[in-house]
View 1 (tube, rainbow, N blue to C red):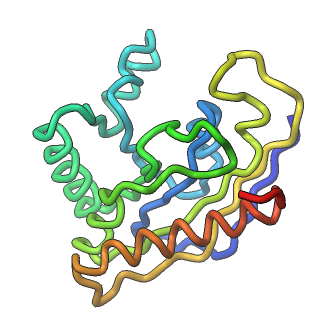
View 2 (cartoon, one colour; view 1 turned 120 degrees about the horizontal axis):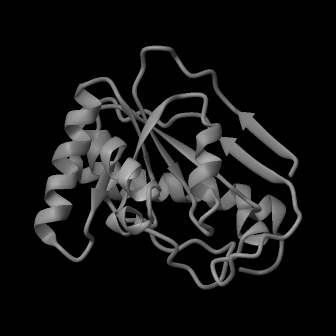
Length: 188
């Protein structure tokens, strides 16, 4: 499958980022492996159930049980600690493959944006336009199509307070949504 990566910035070697991609397909997780920055994934604990992969995922990444308030809180603490340890994060802000009408995104959750503001690190919006066509959520039979991952310019959180979480979340959403609309012009 042809793959292309667009970087709209040059990542700084020792800088920590939070990468926030849209999420329409299970193919989005391996697509984020094209990220030139080594990042820890923060994701649902459902991934732990996959034989062999689940064990490795649990050991290398941060998992969350979205049904548990305690787990969500502990995940925020672990994500904050990872950032303090100099590790970048990948967080799918939709909270999973939620939308039933790709390429229309679901509303973003606050976790990535709260962590970015609390730790004063940059958010990198990421657009993955075609994976929902290649591997729709409803099937495990891939279709032939090129894969593309677009890493947008980082959004600074320097000086932001938690009261600005919503505006940071919405700005990130708008950047990804505008990019998706370049590829899919139908009324959404």
